[in-house]
Image (cartoon, rainbow, N blue to C red; front, side):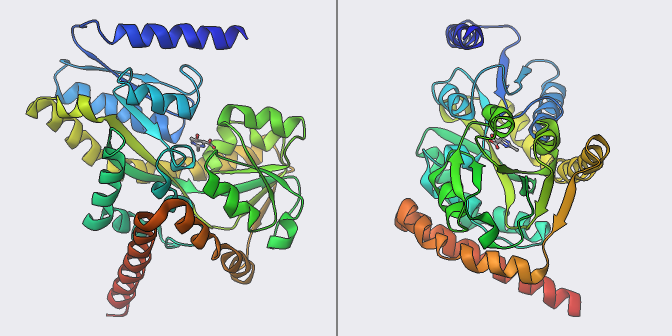
Length: 345
Ligand code: 6CS
C-alpha cells in the first residue's frame, strides 16, 4: 500500500516536473527491468553516448523497473510526455498495438540471431513498425533481441502434452496467452513484478523469459527446470515520445539517432554475454537446477502446435498484422537462403 502511494506521488512529481525548464535539460528514460539487466545496459550506454555527444548539454536520467510502475504505466507516461524515452516490450504494449505481437509468435523467426537482425532492419518491415508506433504517438528508435525465451518450470517439459494443466505466466498480451494455450497450458498474464511471489505461492507453475531475467528476478529459486525450446527471442522496442522527438533540433536529433545506431552491435553482444554468464550464476546459486535442451524432433512438435496461432494472430491484428507476418516470413526465408548460398560458395 505504502509503495503504491509512493509511486503515485512520484508519478505526480514527474508529470508536474516536466513543465519546469531544467538547465541542462533532463531526458527521462524508463526501463522495464532492474539495474544490471539488458535494458539497463542499453539505457546506460545511451546515456553515456548522448551526454558525451552533447558535451553535457543534456542529462539522461535512467529509471529502473520498480521506480515508476509497470510496463503499461511506463507506456502511458511516455505517451503523455512525462517521460521522453522508454522501453516497451511487445508482450505488454501489444495490447495497445496488436500488430507488434508478430514479434511474439513462435517459430516464425530464424534460429540464427544474425538473420533476424537483418530481417528487422529490412526497410519494408522497419517502416511498418515505425508507422504502427507513430499512429499511437510514439517514435520507435529501435527493436532488438534480449536473447532466447526460456521456460522456467517445476517439471521437465519436452512435448506440448507436458504443458497440460501447467499454470504458466506470460506477459499481458492476448497473443501470448493464445501461444501457450495452443500447447495446452493454462496461461496466466501477470506484471513482471508479480511473478516471483506467484511462483513462490504456487499460484503459477512456470514462466518464460531470457536467462539473464530468470537470474535477475531470482526465478531459479522457485523453479528448478530451465527448458530451451528456442521458440522465440525476447524482442523489445526502444521508444520516444513522438512530439518530443519532432521538436528536437537537428543537432539534438543527431545525438539521439547516432547513439541508437551505435547501440545496435553493442546490445547484440551484451545480451549474448549476459545470458551466457547468468546461466553459470544460476547453476552456482542453485546446483539442483536442471537444464533441458529440446532435440530437433521435440522442437518440431512444438513448432507444429504453434502454427495455428498464426491464424489467431491474424484475427487479433487484422489485415495489416497479417501482411506484416507474411512479409517477415518471406524475408526470413530470403535472408536464410542468401546465407546458405554464400556458405556453399
Ligand atoms: O516478463 C516480463 O514482463 C519482462 N521481461 C523482460 C525480460 N523484460 C521486460 C518485461 O516486462
